[in-house]
Length: 306
Image (cartoon, rainbow, N blue to C red; front, top):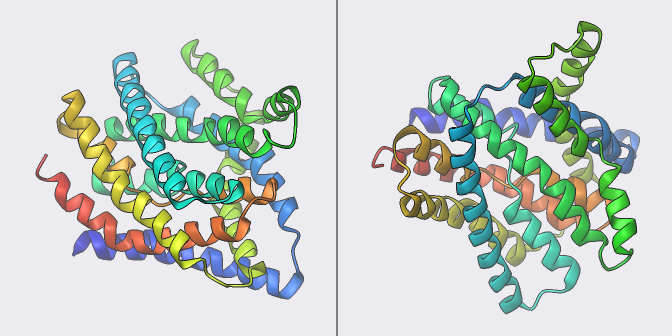
């Protein structure tokens, strides 16, 4: 019950307030959603990745174990959703949006505070979650963009789009600077932190603006399918993979918890930026975030049996 109340007050309610502000701003001023999307893609997201990666502390063994888990988990989840969307005979645009709503999950502004709440600020579990966050930032900005552009642009043009994204360069630069203990000058570090701290607010406001522009004709069957795959199948698959790999203790718990979070805002930002099922994507994020207040406490309870 304590987990339920904490998650409701400290995760769900603040997120809903930010989304509501975005809806209100759109209704009042007709804010340009594509401008907000570009700010998230080209400014706030790369700054967040750089800061979190540069400040993190993790050993090579932890990194390799987490990466192995992620590769297996992601591959199995991808295979499951691929089978389901083929059975459902969804159109190409909806297939991509459905897939993105399941394989891209909120590993940053939802999972990071959740991890620290559940594990009492443990630095080890935080390092694990940061690795997952990095992978969940990199994939939408590479594979996600490729799938949305493959049918309407050449491979060369698609790669040019991907390589134009700052987050692609933020990751190796942060890793190199951290590995060689190169300090970031305060004149750069201060604005970077300002921008990184603004990521969550701007991303949630962007979601609110998109929801404000929606017709609110819910695609119930598709949205509910997405929510079930993300919130139920995701953590169950996480349990299976840690069992397969023989991972135990805090590592197993942190990895499973990382699989249980709702759909990422990245799916909405991609849908808006590349004009592909933006309404469905927004609905999937909004509803999965709300439903997670019921599913996350169940996952946390089950972690005690590992």
